[in-house]
Image (cartoon, rainbow, N blue to C red; front, side):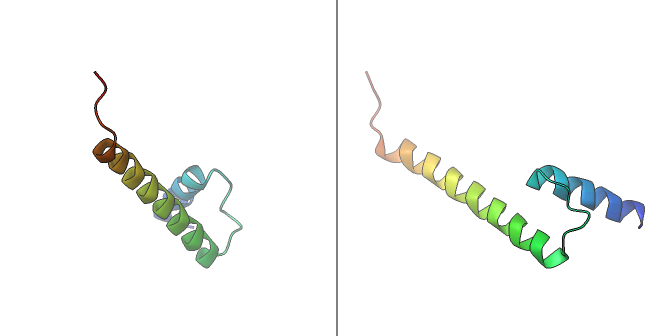
Length: 57
């Protein structure tokens, strides 16, 4: 395994919170997409709350 592959494996393990060394690439991609979608949705909801929540005085 190249140094670059080891770095990617460490990064994906960190992002997913588990050891990815024995997981199929397609499964890793699927899980990373879910993380990205969840983060995007959470960010969108936080921005929406700022728009619809009136300021408190």
